[in-house]
Image (cartoon, rainbow, N blue to C red; front, side, top):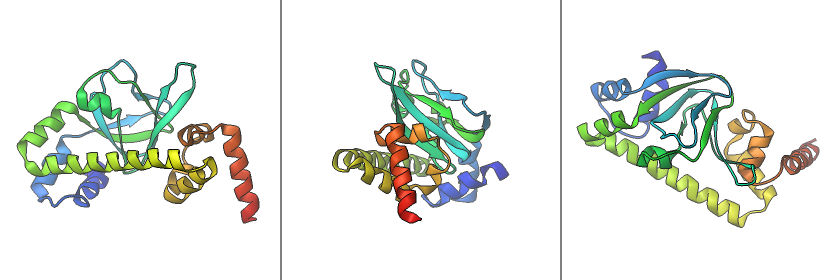
Length: 196
């Protein structure tokens, strides 16, 4: 159960669950090791799994018509990731989800998740809480992108997600924040000179 300890803790923070229910829940997941730069979701293929990150980091991104990459989401230890539109509706994905370093995930298939939800209401409650948190996070991100300057977006990100900043490449962070890598470098240098 050692590989499932972080998932078990994650679940217990969100729902009240008996030990046997927790075991049943965790048994629906499979441990997978993912190499750096390996894709766990790719466009045009249905995302068959939802992933809980035990250890590592991931980036979900799309490629625009002009070939430019747009980062949609990051995931580090104790976070979830997939192409949710593809996973929930079981239709072809539009995103790439790639490991930014050698990582370990626990994956649950769409079918196994549906089976869990049918079996007990408490499991459905857990996945509803996940969905609500994801929706709230995405709404906050849209509002920040529409109302804050690039520098304010960077400062807010540093404040909220310091662990991500040290784990993801600069180009990916710039893409997530809606700026060029060069502009992000300027902001970083400005911040460093302010602090020194």
